[in-house]
Image (cartoon, rainbow, N blue to C red; front, side, top):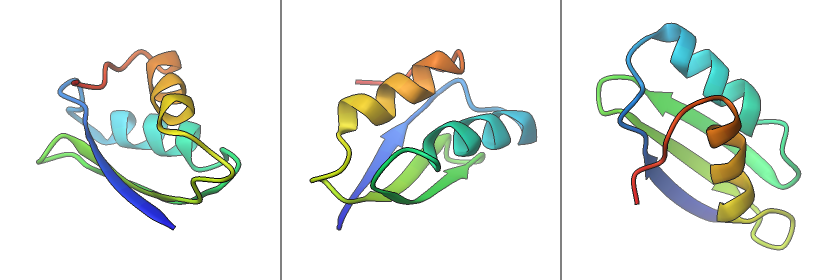
Length: 69
């Protein structure tokens, strides 16, 4: 398993948390996706052979949030 933390400066509330977790969690290979509202980031554990950072970032982007690079 691979663990990453993505900075998402647009996170500001419970709706943001729910929206992002709901978009990332069902992706193939994603084991966990936990949004920290205070730190404005998303901690993700995933199987790198089933998913990619690009796919995860795309799922977050589709919800209207921008991942800081």
